[in-house]
Length: 121
Image (tube, rainbow, N blue to C red; front, side):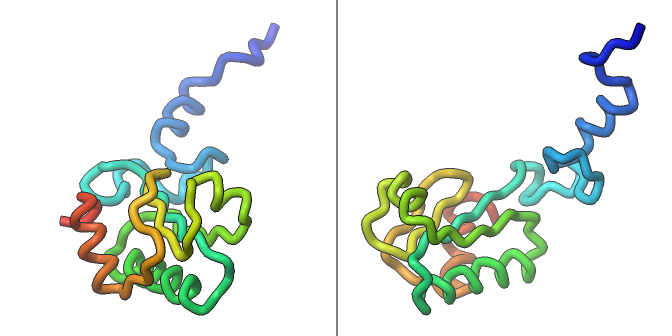
C-alpha cells in the first residue's frame, strides 16, 4: 500500500534546497540574498502613474545591479494597496513591512534605504 502523505527522502531534500513553493530548483538556499537573510520581497504600491513606474524600475534595476535575489512586484490593485493602510502612493513594502509612503526614490536612494533596512551591507 502506498503512503500518499509521506514524502520520499529525495523530495524532502529537494524541498529544503529550494526557495520556490512550486519545487523548482532554479534558486537554491545557498543563493539567498544578503548573507542568508531569506527571500526578499519588494512591493511597489502605485496607481500606474509615471512616478510609480519610475520607482518600480529603480527597484528592479537595483536588485539586478547588486545581485539581490528578490521578488519585485508592482501592485496597482487599490484593495491590496489599502490593505497596507496606504493613502498616498507610491509606497514601498519590503518583506510585508511598509517602509515608505509618498516618495519616489532614485536607485541610489533605494540603495541607502536597503542599507538602513539591513538588506545590503
